[in-house]
Image (cartoon, rainbow, N blue to C red):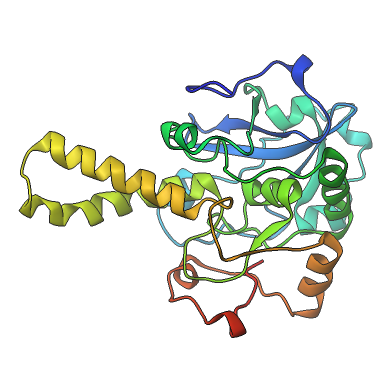
Length: 272
């Protein structure tokens, strides 16, 4: 993995890889799982689903789904993306449609903490180790048929989907903003600026303030990474979809819910 970029060539791809491509002038990246045979399984807003942050981010960050061409893709036209998969949001596309003209990058797992902190942009790597490729592909294909969750930009986005496929990990408490690295980056920047403001009482030097803000930002990314958190559980994909269907596992629907104090372990609800 490079310090500045995780960009790779298509010849380096292998089934089970978590890949992504930047969208909207590098503001947001779309993530998916490469399952081989030039196919990528990924998570987008399903039919009639909204991003639902209720903020200006809804304008700046459009759906993570690639823009559809006026000319149907000869490969993807034959995919099993029927009305049910459009509703649950998990779709299969050819690699070219997934990239939508963008470059190909590979998300890295089990990275060294020093390298993790050196990567200033979230949503490119994690401290968590990946499960075997066979397990990753099985989860992705199962979710393609059975659905993942209701799309939410901050808690249930395409990166969350890919991370779950790779690790089987889900957040079990609501005390810390979720596992998506790029969501943490979006929230962490302004949060770092707010938290570091009191340090003006210690120093008024602009460079000192900048260093403190960067430090707070890096600390927030490190603490919230799925590989460093203590409020996660390992869940089989069959249990996840069954729990969502029965209501035993409840999806977090808005950002306000992410900021409430954590529940006690005895009453913790998995935030799917």
